[in-house]
Each structure stands twice: as C-alpha cells, then as structure tokens.
Image 1 (tube, helix red, strand yellow):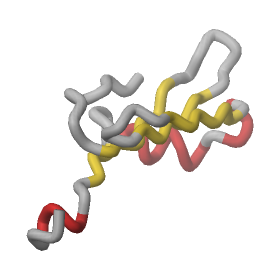
Image 2 (spheres, rainbow, N blue to C red):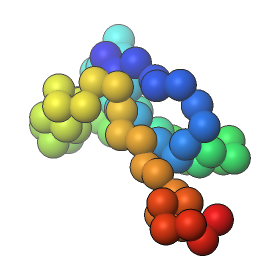
Image 3 (tube, one colour):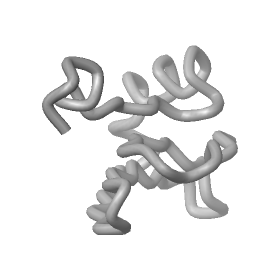
Length: 70
C-alpha cells in the first residue's frame, strides 16, 4: 500500500488493494481538489507495477514555479 507524502504539491497516489481487491488512483492538486478512480483488481496489473516503484506516490511540481513564472 502506498503512503501519501506530505502535502503542498500536486500528487498522484495509488492505494490498495482494498479488501475487495480494488485499487484507488487519487489525483490531488496542491489546492486540495481531488479525483479518485476505482480500478478492479482484475484490471490492476499496471497499477501494481507502478505502485511497487513509487510507494510514496508521485509528486508533480508546478512547472511554472521551476521556471520562475509563478
């Protein structure tokens, strides 16, 4: 199971498997907006692979901040 990193940035997290075998993919903006998608375990092979390689999620920096265009 993935463990969410500290807030402050946009991030993508993969949670699961839940008791019923499903996974949840969560997209969260730094502003707190959230989109969560439930994926059946039978369709989760790709998610399992990515989850194993990014157990703390994927933090997505704001490209404008890096370029000084905040």
